[in-house]
Amino acid sequence: MQPLSQFQSHQLEVIARVTPHAMAGHVLNTTVLAFAIAGSVPKPQLIAWCLYSYGIALALIYRRVRSRGRSPVNFLRAVRRATVYAFLLALPWSSMAVLNLGSLSQVEELILVALVVGMAASGTILLSAIPQAAFCYMSTILIPSAGKCFILLNQKSYILLGVLSLSYWWFLAALITKLKREI
Image (cartoon, rainbow, N blue to C red):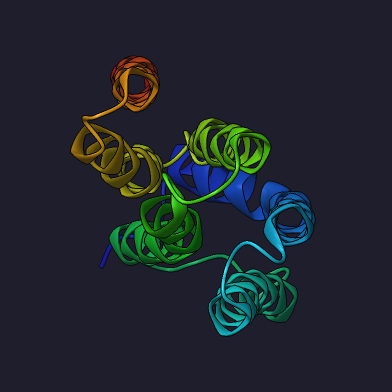
């Protein structure tokens, strides 16, 4: 096992430094969505979604605090771990969109779509130092959301939302690909 290069170490440091801020945003956006759709989503589903979403964010903050000052020994293991965490962080947003698009009021759906797309974009950019994790995060959120929109083919607005989700995915994929080449 060879030691991390200075560049690899810097890549991981970038993610580590923004993790507390990103998790604070994750918790805030979870709370905003919970308040926005309370009463429209079955209470047990909303509670379970919030507990999972808060739980994964708090677990990552705890992990960050616990490992403060230590740097990973194996870069590939750190990348795999970041990718798994990205997937776990994306799951609540993806599931909320897949489970509830088409069943909420127009205002609630606008808030849901804005938060889902915003989380996908901001999380992808924050994870861009580790392209594999960024790609996993955005794909986990946007691809299932687009699929759900295309399943609701009886309404033009959902098809357009699906196209919008895919266009964001395409843009973010191009951005991550460009950054990966630069790295």
